[in-house]
Length: 524
Picture 1 (tube, rainbow, N blue to C red):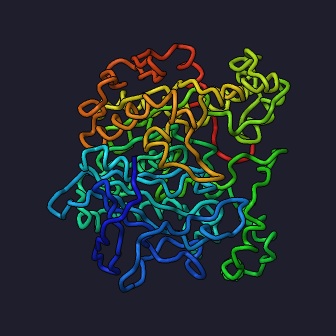
Picture 2: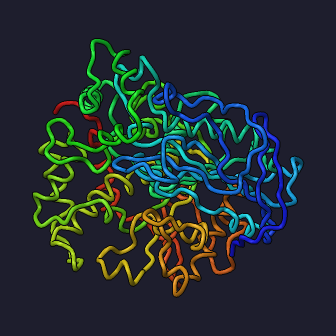
Picture 3: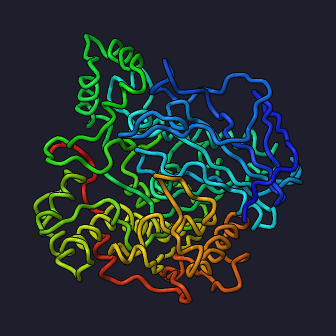
């Protein structure tokens, strides 16, 4: 287990600061809350991240702010000044060590930092002190994904993704000083973090492909995918809510940048898309800007226009349970899906009703809760993963390993939730290292009856980070994991039941339907 017992104060000299970290008793040094970019406040709000300012000697012994999200209040530990990175390294690692680097991109639907401040010391220790672990914060909600012509002309689009790229460039420039190999970086994300990995894979920028050697996508998140021209209504709604409507776009943006965080947060809330009744679950998302995101991501994957690197791509059985309503009727299912994908047609809705009829009950939930859970989970998280896996297979690309997490948990079973979104993170990093009150917290069962699955997950992931394959350093209890490219099969993960399984034809049929829907926000 990770220890907080300190031994000495290690130092790392970067070009802009010297950071003083902490040496732990498990042979790991940690450096917390280091700036990787300037504070994105004032005139830097809604602009691409700027380099950090020159500093002197700075303590890096506590986590710093994470980024304020949609609907949140400014509070200690959360705010706009949030572009910080955390690094865990073996104590004896030097610039000559050239260790593999694991960069974790947290999720939160692009609207929150949902998994900040994970502790990476245990995975470094468990690896035999053979890796470097990195995690960080990036802008979300209106600060990370505000769009519109005025924003583009007086700032930048997709700044949350630009923060991630700035971090990956920071890794290239600095990780060797921690003992890491900038040529062996694995980017790993969960949910929107996994969606971000997918977006970096399809980014056309020549330099992007040199920033990482492999990727891990847990529950890849592909929601509505608007083009930048489709969000003028969102821009004007936000401007009006903050009382900044003016005679010019420049004047409006100056006004918006002048509003303090608390005032801005009053308007950083979801509202219905045009022609929709209810607000979507995720309001601010990356936009197709012709730069970082040149076209609809799943289409780019299907055309083979993506960076080919080894991948792990997988899902939990019940991805939708945290996001869907207590649907009582078939029409409730359709209404929710329409609110989140407003370009669904009448024919689409007929197919949804056919594919997701009344299912076996999941007490204490409403009758159509299992139907809407599966519809949303497959449309937004499970089927995008299968589409990407098929694209990799069809392109004869590097190997990709897939999994289906179906762990039984007493607590979630009592809620009728099955194996929900994000469940595996507590096992991957260790259950003591992922507890964020009010955000992601590790399932209790990883401390007790599901504890044997912790080394299964952790060792597969560490092996992939070290070798770009999950197999060489897998745990003794874990079977060999065969890549999707060979057999279109996944690793089923259950307690005392790990084996490869084929994906059924009905799953492929439903996913083919979801791959064909229009994820834009244009008028019907």
